[in-house]
Amino acid sequence: MSATKTSPFVALPANREAVLRVMPMPADANVHGDVFGGWIMAQVDIAGSVPAARRAAGRVATVAVNSFLFKQPVFVGDLLSFYADVVKTGTTSITVSVEVYAQRQRLDAEVVKVTEATLVYVATDDARRSRPLPAL
Image 1 (cartoon, one colour):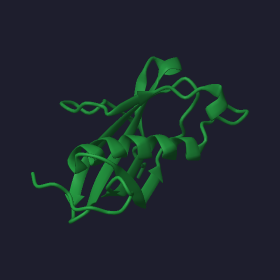
Image 2 (cartoon, rainbow, N blue to C red):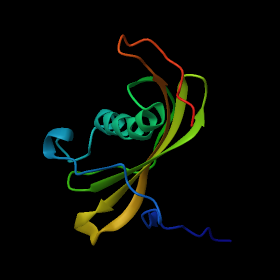
Image 3 (cartoon, rainbow, N blue to C red):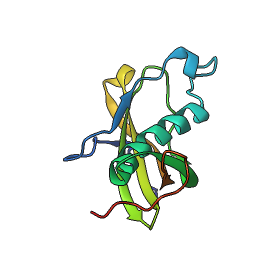
């Protein structure tokens, strides 16, 4: 019995708009061209804050990273697309799911899902204290 190998290649999500698109540069990678995980984490945090700030109608702060999975490596020259959606809200908190896809420019623009994460933000006031989310 032989195992079948599934392709890691996918399509960019249809009917969704990326909240962030960025191409890592050589300064974002090690000497072999592999992009630093910390750089990707920072970009995920920025992407997640977009729908969180929209839902909070103002300032938010990251309070937790509930999950973070690197599924595939990211290389200098990949075009990364970040998709972020609010998945849960509390009194002051907003949980956001972020998915990251890489278009491999050097490989005929094949697309792979490279990262998945769930982050929690809290709405804050001008003094940086938590505040209730506005009603929808």
